[in-house]
Length: 329
Image 1 (cartoon, rainbow, N blue to C red):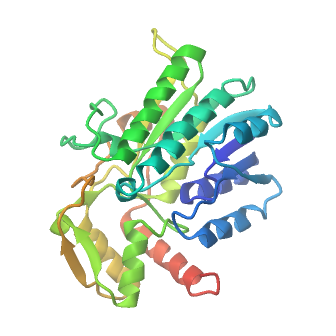
Image 2: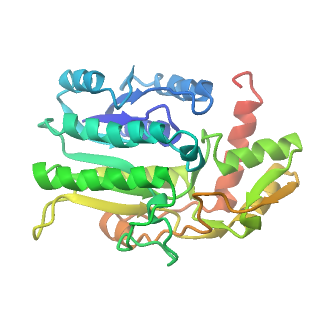
């Protein structure tokens, strides 16, 4: 089968491509390679992927209708789409909200409209986010909870993607599934996320910013568990039933809310260094806790996360030292 993976040079996209290639799929990767964070890291991921004969890549902006249309036209045999291209980051959405409407809203619409004509397409899976739960205070977050109180432009654009997908499933019968990811970490991770920021600053002897005075918890989910959920979902497209279109949402998380201070403690042990803490107030658009209810994901895909932060963080530190202590940085 041939799978289109958008955001292929990104953190989750890279690992997803590797997993698909590892099971014998042909993968077409696209990515704009923007400079939201270090482009050399994205290029290094692509370098690893290009070692595989089944991988091809084109540098494309998913919001570019002409470029995406041309790609799809010459690859009519695409059987699956894993749409991971996105403008990420809650806080940056306060700085450049237009980047989010272009990449997340316009880009998603372009892909939906272009891919709906693929006769061989079995399933279109896309990345949503735990951020859609917004101001919800009930824990754990369930896919049955209301999601009409986004606290950031990023969250609002992710919810918009879900709503557009439901419309396309209803109108055209496209099998579409949105995966609400919960705080992903692991090797080759994004340097703008907490785990990598903390590692870099602790090793440099700099204070680490800890928001809400440390009274926060996150459902930290290791990258291998995220990818296993993506592939399990991709293999089981939704079907229309009882007047319900083939559109679904699922939580992909570790099903455990870890206190941020314990996360830091485990990271200190893995590094063999103590962190200097810079306690700060809650940031605009942030939430104090995330916690995934994965009942439906377990039921429908047999999804069972297996990696705790006690296992995952040492693996991340090992990769970090190997990558950033080399000449690649």
